[in-house]
Image (tube, rainbow, N blue to C red; front, top):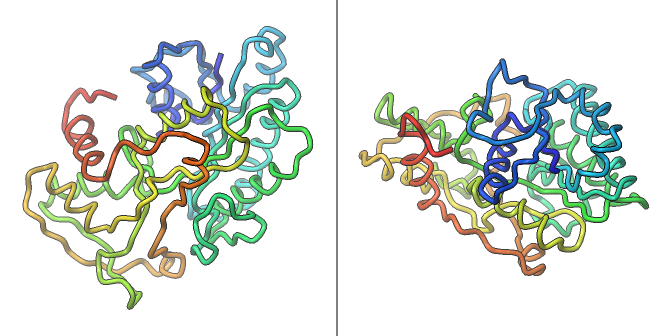
Length: 322
């Protein structure tokens, strides 16, 4: 049995798809968003759906304690603009601590979502071997994630296998519910389809021309494959980056979407909103040496291949594959 939280969300629902491809269906899906609000699990096979506050009584069941092998905790408030610290603390820190402690007590594997937002402006690099004590996130969301990373690394009693995953710019199928937090690949597809052009932020940094701001874009199919790989290979416990390992520009992304749609490139440059201008990152690139050093697999989806797959197999079809 595998418990997956955030199951009615982007990465976790894709992870359940990944498990289903491997023939695994004994899955407990958990989320704070009920299936009557949205249902990203319509094409998934799982045993039971629980709301996030129902999990604690569920975990007291002796049969559950015996059967569970992994808790994969993707549930969290992922808004980088959330300003309610008590809400973030309860949902992203305390909730995760309780799951970690349950897995430690009952000797179950534990995977949780950290975030590349923990790296802040990147002044200390993007290396998953950096002590999180020195990291300075730019927002409260990143702060909630780095506080858990710090806490986990000093615990004396831990799950037998545990991994914190620092997701970089993940994109792919089933992210449309994320609204403003959805990827630029998703937004670009809809803008181009509707208007024939794409709006991209201007650069306010003299080191980067407009559109040459750099991000580590990683396809969700690589991410969920890696998550499953962790449960099979069980490398050294700790925190791992989830990125492609090579930064690409917004223009690279834009051109990939135009190309996948077979449409001419047309870009309008717009101002970065003032409320995020001081938090804007001009470069992110995951250091993947720790991951590869554990003999774990490299990414399989480069930007162009991933965008083409996303657009042509998920965004354009009436009945997408995922």
